[in-house]
Image (cartoon, rainbow, N blue to C red; front, side, top):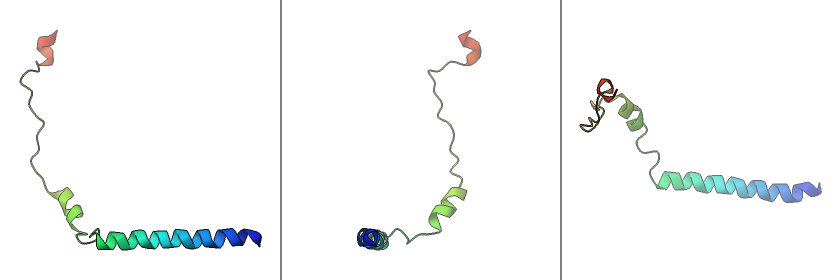
Length: 62
């Protein structure tokens, strides 16, 4: 029973901390655009690797 004297306040503190973090995330707009990140993956930007003009082809190095 004496352990509950320490564990209950710790549990209440951690629960309050989690609630505070959740409320902060709501106020900062973390949940405003739920579908944007999912759709951003599907968009093709046409990215290509950068061409390095200074780099020689492998055949010429030997």
